[in-house]
View (cartoon, rainbow, N blue to C red):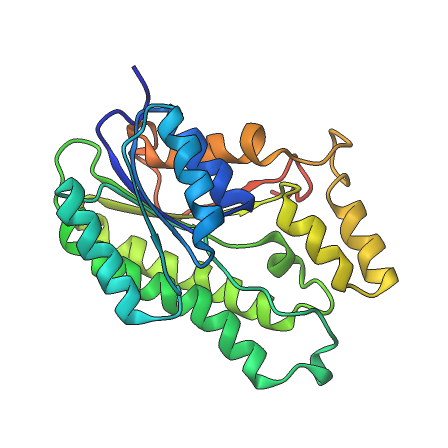
Length: 259
């Protein structure tokens, strides 16, 4: 028996990185998955891995910034599985880092539309299927960022969009609790393939800081997306988190410790 047996879970951004590892972990816990990404070939690799774990999987290549694509994705998910129990808003397009004065407004548009706007749309589109479920209800998990909390230099659009995600999530948690929907955010610190590729675009001093940030914690090691971060997503998706909403969890090995 898995912790998510019978639950239908939507996860965005599953071709690589945290999204891919979450999908695999959720599949192993018995969830039925609807996954998406821009890159179809890599998405299908994730689909295959999840199916090998015994999951039923619907996969669709789409642009998270296209509202029409999101409508189609949700409609096809419900057509396939009949309902939605969990929404994991993981996808986000990160623009090339640079000083705030040099960042064009187009970069802010990209990051806002790939996170805040996409999360906004998907929460509303999934709402009719998430609302008023019996027992522990349903769950929305929105990905935020510790880099935004810390105000990491050269990431102004990223920080602005990710902090907006946290604010939006708190409001929706308050408004939708009456419908037995819980909404939480997660700030992960896991060294993914995407992070490693992103280091190539950083200035040397920023790159050194970013690389060190992954091991700057009491455990003195980088977090593993599958073993260290994905289990938190499983917890939020499962009935075990039934009494938690409007909260932000730092799955970071203690990088940020405060009262």
